[in-house]
Length: 106
Image 1 (cartoon, helix red, strand yellow):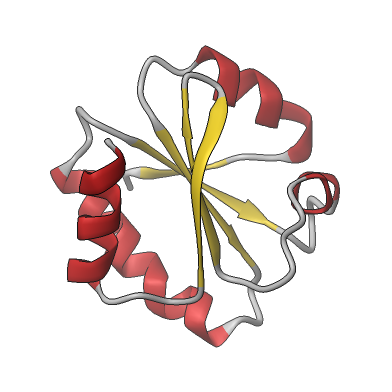
Image 2 (spheres, rainbow, N blue to C red):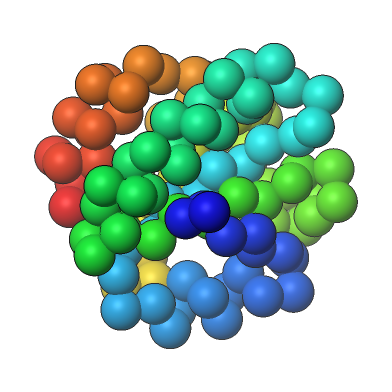
């Protein structure tokens, strides 16, 4: 598994200390589109493991971080570089669109 779980308590530390850009998938167990995008993120994580780290944050179990970043709908994907938020996508996207978005930001 190339995606890792991240929690409210570890969020800032993981984001600030990562040598790689980080993609955070804000999701929930009950969210259909979240389940669609999960396997796509796994594939991208495998293919780009030397370029990006992918984390999943369950919004039901970790409400502080989504609130801090104003997450209103899920799935929400946030891309962080050098500890800073650089871009956000809301909703499920096909793999080619996700890859194009990531490539334009990496």
